[in-house]
Length: 190
Image (cartoon, rainbow, N blue to C red):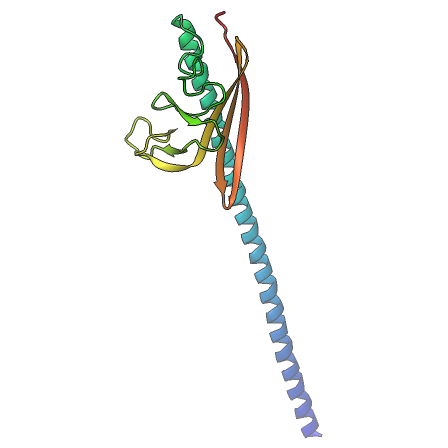
């Protein structure tokens, strides 16, 4: 009888050990799933944060191009010149109707990119912390290459109105994203 009791106790011990290992495996699996879910949520949040930052930057870069053209129009009008001088007044101007152009705000210039979309150069960002243009975007070849490309297209509606289209392109991973802003400008001096 003693032998059967000892065997019975040994089998209970072995069963408990097996159950403890099974419990440990289940606990590890639950822990791995919890950690994976937490990392996924953190990674998704970070990705959305980066996407949002790029969209906000694209919005401000598009608005900057419109304000740049608006400023030239206003200066021309205040100086008694043609309202589109230096923008699209003649075929010699960089954004003459049918041409795409790039705005370089810090250098106060507009550059012709050609008659086909997608040929404007990538923007660059000033990384020099002691510079007066620190953080600004432009076309200065000494600045760090940025992830944005901006192009402006002007269409004449009539003699006193133009339509501006500013398109910002950037990449996120392997995808190219874009942000487009439309605005109309009037010759307010007529």
